[in-house]
Length: 156
Image (cartoon, rainbow, N blue to C red; front, side, top):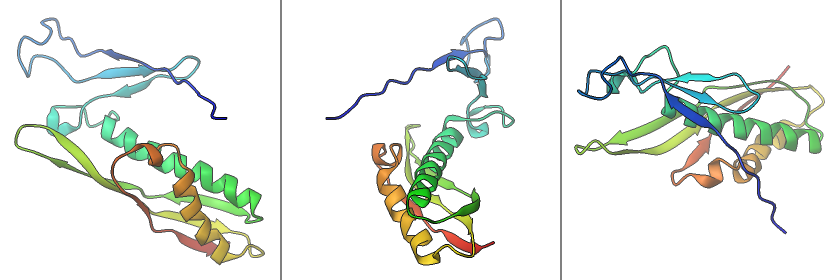
């Protein structure tokens, strides 16, 4: 039987400079994401859309969510399959296409995890488990674009 889990976030626009949205350039795209019991995330739009480059934008957060979900499933699967991971870093990258009417969509995200495993661990198993992690990741299963992975397995 399937279980349901509910996640909640409050997103509050903090960019009213006093005149609201009277003009496209009259306000900032700044916002805060709040989830109960966790530190807030300061966000904005991508700088291409007048956002603050020092804040996370929704596109950053989507790529990060896919990377983190993959990593967490991968670590679980490694632990269950006797692969000892000693370090993990992913240089994830997403590609978004925009259209003349202003709409857009992601066309794909590439995960490029660099994984260090113990000398006793099997590199082939370590590599193969990325495929399973991709299939299990809740976020990857929920998007309508491909999420690929090009892992690098090193001993150390």
